[in-house]
Length: 97
Image (tube, rainbow, N blue to C red; front, side, top):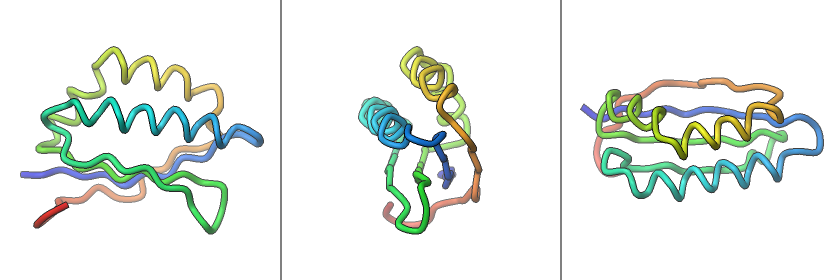
């Protein structure tokens, strides 16, 4: 069963572009992961947030991605500049992503 997440991340003032670069690097890295079906990064037009849409083959595939060295490195880079992180919704994607 496919597993998806839509998250909203906001950087501290002045660090949005840095956070965006980190998340785009994560998207590129996740393209190499067999269990990742989609990892899309978008900037909000309503506020300073960045929205991430992820689709994984399973919840286990998502959990495994969190243990990857690249993921750990990128999370460590992002933590100091994050003002907030929200998991907006966890979904079960249907059809083509």
